[in-house]
Amino acid sequence: MTYARTTTNGMMRNRSVSRRAFLRSSAGLAATGLAAPYFHTSAGLCGPPMSPNDRPQIGCIGVGWIGVYDVASAARYSDVVAVCDVDRLRAEASSNGGKRAIFDDYRRLLDRKDIDAVTISTPDHWHARIVIDAIKAGKDVFCQKPLTLTIDEGKILCRVVRASDRVVQVGTQQRSNDPNPAIPPVDFDRGNGKELFLTAIALCQLGRIGKIRRVTCAIGGGRVGGPFRKTAPPPELNWNLWQGQAPEHEYIKERVHGSFRLWWEYAGGIMADWGVHHVDIAQWAIGMDRAGPLTVEPLRVVFPTPMHNGYAVRDDCYSTPTEFLVKCTFANGVELFIRHDTDNGILFEGEKGRFFVNRNRLSGKPVEQLSQEPIPEEVLRKLRKGKKPNTHMGNFIACTRDRTEPISDVFTHHRAVTTCHLANIAMRLGRKLTWNHETEQIMGDDEANNWQVRAQRKGFEVCG
Figure (cartoon, rainbow, N blue to C red):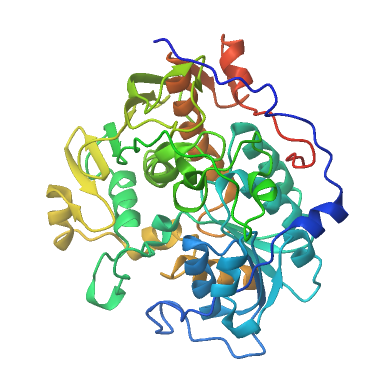
């Protein structure tokens, strides 16, 4: 394959940003005033609402679409006392009448000693740095997925978390069977989607389909878009701060908010978005959640704009893949395919049968046999790390109380998102990669190995 590289000359200028200038230039933000979404509230599931004296105080960093959902979720279990973002209009729209403190610089929010924990719902390229700074500030953390922009960031985060006593939950809510904001919430009592993904993992681990041969993760495709018009950024947005570690670009409204994941500068496309949800479940089910693939091979990839040496030729069009088929092989003989087409979800195929799972259904012969041979509760409880069924935010808050590891921990998430990052590197370079999950190095390919790290603008670097 022949790809094109976008020149970075001029885009990676080292601009020293002092803390004072950083604070002065940032746009203000506020908390959301939206009511919390419906969650089942029986004591056996989410637990009773905390009394005012038991409720932790939380600050929310990033209050865009998923950020609004996270603020509302956090408010169910805690007192949201402060919010932070770089888009003033989003802040004003969600300020709850100014009852919550408003910050434009997340570091100022972290300086508040009364804040016990934070949610981080910013674009992907800001996740790792804010998580590290929050941990150093002594806060527990709920951070949206994907936790990292690069493999190297994941290695740094694992070191930082391991050396700390902080609780860090990653927002891969399929582990809790928590609803996506766009679909109706789970009602455990009615069995609507009850622990679909944990049941799928249990089916695999109990050998209900025999030795697993193949897993297919269908995650949907990307989008074609552009060329888009370059304009001055709107006055309510601090464009320089929004870009953070990413290469400096002229403002295009399609780069921010709802479509930022379609640009390599800020994210990993649909592969690191939907991909990390399904790959996370798949690797857990096959017992590879603390390891990784041996090889990652791009069998087909279509980009929305011409590429050269892994970079988009144009800087005014979406750049992440629209169509793809990637094959990953594991040491236990399982082949994992990640593709854009077919029904969104995960298909598990073994020697004795197969079944399918997504956020709406769990189907196949092994599922039909559950009425005669149900999954033992102790198996599900072990998958929940000893906890009862809960919402994802509820699990986080419970773990901040008893100081245990949450259901979606940093270490297994790092392994899942590493597979997705490797898939992106393989697609961008157009060749098969060999991965050593013990040393966390790409073997025999120095160029590809260098892609574990991205250049970062001065003043915004991620370091542990």
